[in-house]
Image 1 (cartoon, rainbow, N blue to C red):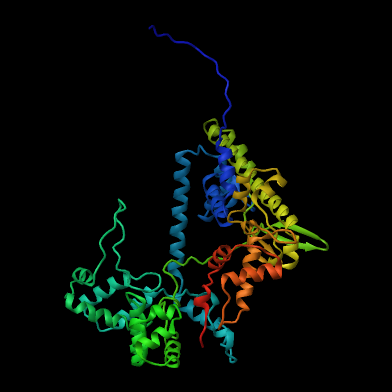
Image 2: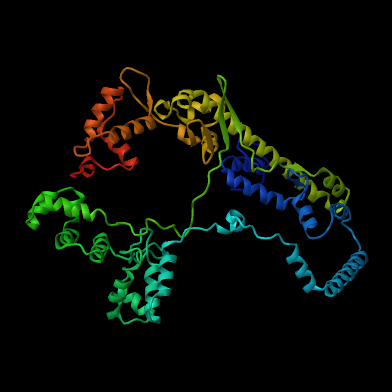
Length: 510
């Protein structure tokens, strides 16, 4: 069979993602903080971009280095400055610096400091705020548990190898303050063998026989019970320090599972004591701290302040959506610099590319702003009852509802509402908060699942703590009071999402 070459024409349709479209989609899903960082990077990398002041970052950096604004503009236009001219200016700068140093050496600094002291205002006799340092000098951050323990370790009388062992223990604490002896995983996903105290002792050069004693001393640092290997050990250490009696120690050692299940009769039978004695002992045990690291900050402080992207304000009978442009730099094109640089044939191609990039970025940011406002206005239109009366009146809504109203795809709505926040009269909410599945009501319109969660939370808050409501009882109350018909397993799911225990664990005996 012979082979030959042919030319064939073929028509086909395909979706082409241009770099500009990719950039627009990426900007759309960025949070406010990420957008601020993206703008800063673009300002650093594109000399034709300028912020609200009208100056590019590159020209600002030149001004800050000692060059005046007029000189900076001249430097932008003279890209072909000769080497001789540069050397001459450098020589003039050296002469000026040497002249300045000479005048500095001639100053009588003792007389200068004496005059400065005489010129200072006399201290206030009233005291008070005038004597305090600026507030920014008093700002600090909370210590992490590890930092707090290391500080105590420095104050202890441990010898060198004991300190190394204690540091290894502190380094293996988990977020609760417990000693995590799990070996973790290898890069290939296989599990490493668990660690032992002997392993830590050998690594630190400590005699393995001394390891339990050093650990026991560390566990009595503040907070007491830190570096325990389980809940029972954590509570036992605290109970020993506080001088708890034999009944309480026995319950901590052997009956914590019965305490969790509220099975107090089993404890009374096993210890051969009365229920009243069990109640009193459990009350004392509940005063102990089960999470030693509770009052300490994490090593990586992840707390950030949320700034809303849009505000929803009521003006008379109308709800108005406005964007929050505070803190966001408005971008412009440095036209003067662009015109001067385009005259240089060598720089024309580079500047043309940067000019197109700047135009696309400005257009994409403006499109992002308009899209967020448009989507928020649609949400406000559908959730007026929520804005007026609260969470109980939140209506069920899905992405398709908003997508059809604004003429966009559901994936676009998902990007717009991710990590974007709106400030309303009811509080600060992520835009995704308003999308809820619907729950059927017997004789009324459907209700949002978030409203059902709040109704369950309210019912449990008002229950008799000595006789808490079961999930089935909550199902009946929801149907009788609000006409909400849901299954028992749905109540259990929502209760777990709210972090509420089951009825058996909510029961209070005293």
